[in-house]
Amino acid sequence: MAQLTSYYIGILTNNTYTPDTYEAAAGKLLTTLHTIFSTQATVETLTKPSSALRQFHTEVEMSHDEHLGLVARCVIDLTGEQRIQLDKAKLSSLLKASTDYPKMKIEKRAVEGVVMPATPGTNERP
Image (cartoon, rainbow, N blue to C red):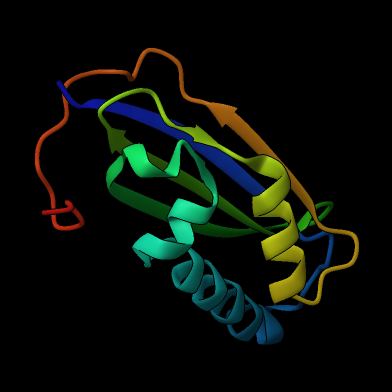
């Protein structure tokens, strides 16, 4: 039976923007997140055990905070035959290598109580 494991990922850039520059900066970070979280092979490099990953889904919300700067909040759902772990160290390395935010902080938390049978989706392996 497939299990769904969900994680909250918070990306705090600590770079503030004006209303005129926010849209471009948010778009650039959103493109980076889309690149990372839209490819099965990339997501597999961030998970343990990667062979257990059958499908995934990510939702991203962008915002701006006067103290934290540009903020991305993501929920990633990982479906596999067992509980799948998301490696924060690998995710942090990949994000830091892909962006220009030297003061960036990354938060990761399992979303408790969301391990349940999964329904097939568009990213399911054959």
